[in-house]
Length: 295
Image (cartoon, rainbow, N blue to C red; front, side):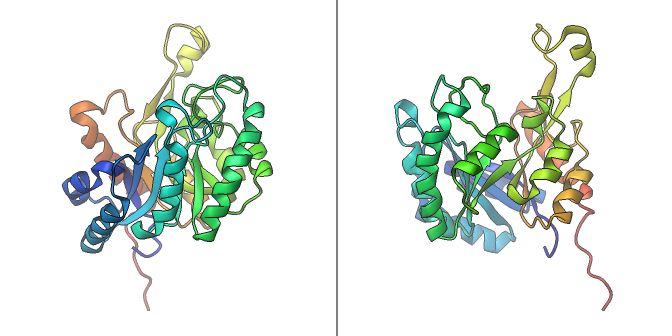
């Protein structure tokens, strides 16, 4: 896999031992393991040991482990989110990865500016904990239907917010889990953004979008007609050859892991059809398989 820039997919952390053996034969080269709001009853050490056995057998890597909840509130369904961040930071090395990803969280119902102090308090401590263990933290750039003024999940969905976050916690091990889709739904062009932010991009999600400019021109973005759809790579508007070229020019050595389960067409019984198409498409965009030069 030398110089390959591996292409993989997301798998639920609690389902990894059931799902990975079923799909590894399709050619996935990496897996990002994700948990929703809590790591729950998952025995992380045991899961990591068994996943590492599978990885050694099938030559894949675990690119990251992630927790997607709101660690800034500590209430309700998010009561275990912060502790889950700590657990994954402590256990990441057992999975063979140095990266933990997820949402920043935010203070519900208030602006991003008002959430920054709490973010600095929580992730100032988490970044130190991670640095002591050689772990990087990557924030997904999903708005979760939030805006600058209000939201329930995440502040890391806008480049102005990124500047505020990284100024508030000036740590080399804090970065982004980036994908073009979440910027395109805001009508942000992802390519110039990617060029500007490559130094802070630690992990890439393989998710695209289709923007219906004809609908925008006729109805705008606040009318009854949908104007943008999340897409599996290969079915959306992004030139992934450009994305991969920009990443490689910047020295990116991570993975691109497909985030499925969002495409309005390739879903349900067509889910894996779409994901495997995306896998082959992204491999083609990176130039195919690594071919050594003549000696």
